[in-house]
Image (tube, rainbow, N blue to C red; front, side, top):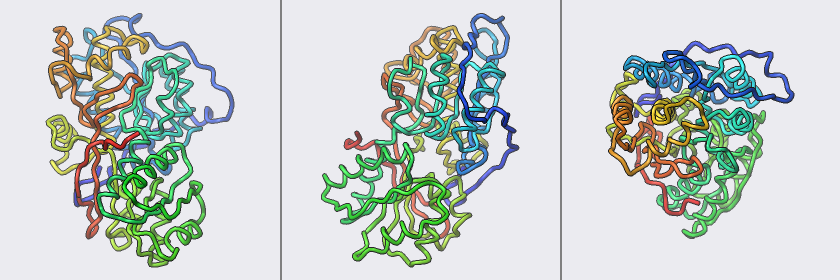
Length: 424
């Protein structure tokens, strides 16, 4: 979590992954756990796959807390389906597809989970997607790579985040609005990032902004000196550089730009330049000064987000970029299962759009929503992370985006923009 002006990171005890399962090899999916065949009152097992270690480890703790307190709220109010309670099983994906796959196997085969949620990283989501679909098990992700929801998903894959293509066009539009005339692009080689580049270039082209250069680098390189020299050291240098990647590589890149006294402005993703306060902690306020960053954001002024801040025990300035999505995932599971009267993924996923999308009576509290569903009232749930509206493929629509600037060692909100019309 980051407060505007005060980055905060809350460590939690890390769960040990069953490392013996991380060995390479094929995966044989087991039959899905069908909750409706079990006695009333029996726990409903929910898997939560999150990063607690590795390059993405800054995001797991608050996502875990959100899942736990939202589950407690539902359970304390009597649960769902006549008194059944959610029981959460956490696994650390270690920011690695291999560990993520091992954790998913444990959640399915040992913990008998009816759904797996959280799932932050796109490479991890892509690694476990065929496993969960084969097991007829719902997966809810915060990953943005377009391919996550592509193809025949049996209606089991639901994205609580903007698609990567929309990130690219949105960030480019924000740079256009800052009147930059020349830009360059420095991007990490991964499925999430690569999908952003062409939509961004189309926005620049339409606005008459010249792209001077585009460099793609590999993750976890020992040095980014050559890439920084090529992008920032050219003459003339670009007005601004769009940086697309993750926290660890961005820390190294910014240290290198400081060393060469680069003059180009930097606009990056918030997962690089904020990362729950970890970026500022790593590079210091002087090196970070003036960097702007962009992120699909929760509806900061909405009643649902305000309720979530209180649920997390945070003040009104607290910014939860991903934990709010995890809250919405738990809420959606409860509402869809109640509506379907089933914990079978193939049944309850058919009801997700019915409880989340308009038309329907607006509702922003899960307990209120469950009451109305039991009364057979058509509802339109507004989540803490987004409006929770989905298209037919399970992608969220109607998202908002926040642009922040690092000033004096603080993350200062510049503006909120709606999903641009130029999004692909």
